[in-house]
Amino acid sequence: MDVIFGWFHNIIAVLSTIEIKDIVDILAIAFIIYSLFKLVRETRAEQLIKGILVLLVVYLISSIFNFVMLTSILKTFFEFSAILLCIVFQPEIRKALERIGQSKFSRKNFRIIHQESHSEAWIHAEKKAISDVCDACQVFQRSKTGALIVFERQTKLLDIAKTGTIINAQSSVAMIGNIFFNKAPLHDGAVIIRDGLIYAAGCILPLTGNEHIDYDLGTRHRSALGMSENSDAIVVVVSEENGVISLSNNGVLTRELDKQSLKNMLTELLIPSLDDTIEFLPIFSLKRKEKKSNGKK
Image 1 (tube, rainbow, N blue to C red):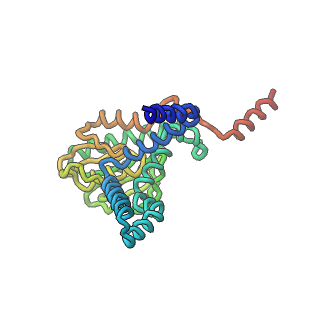
Image 2 (image 1 turned 90 degrees about the horizontal axis):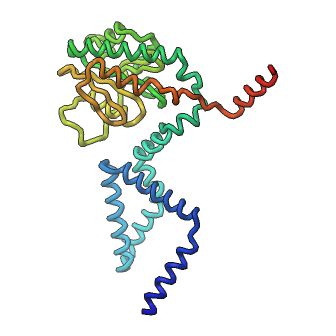
Image 3 (image 1 turned 90 degrees about the vertical axis):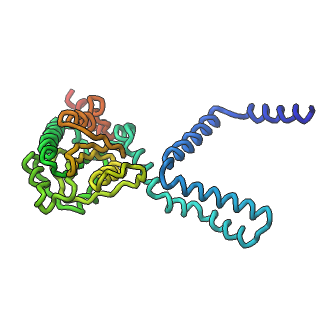
């Protein structure tokens, strides 16, 4: 009985030393661990983690039974595990950092470059590009012409654009139709739309790493999923086999779209709301504006 009371006394003594900052610290660590599990769930990284846990159990067993060689090898492995984990989980780490950079907080509070975005001219050009793409996709749907169109957002796609041909042309239904004409030299690749302009064509997109997608999906759809998994881009696909229009966003493919539903989705995803158009300028810029206004007074 004295042992039990002593045990409870020790627990109460430890709990009495906990402060609010310790609780916040514990919650932060728990959130990070939960986010890591959520990130690697149903991916190849999940199997890698299971393999590491198996090696950890083997290391503990070898230490208990004093297997000198096996213990030393596994000990060396775990000593360099931080570097190995960064190499092995490079795609997952990159994806996590990109998600942080694409969050609303990051977009609003760290918008130092491209301050001209979301101006009236930009919104007009983006709306025109959306309308042209939707009209072209309707034509492609009827003629069963394959197409792959990427709308660039915060994540810049220069490395992807370099795999094709830089165009930098005004968007139009005729231009998009000519690019994806089945005898045109650029029809097999993807078109990248940047700031309402046709920035590049004939681009090669990364394929998705998801092994659980429908086997009926072809290379275009797998490329669309891969592009939306590796960036915040919105990708429109028109199937060459059946003319079905699809949209890929954040690794999720929405199929069986018509012209109006496609236009509604693109407008909602690409055209910012009123709250998003508020610019968070650097502090020194605000101070300069205040000085100018005070001078006028």
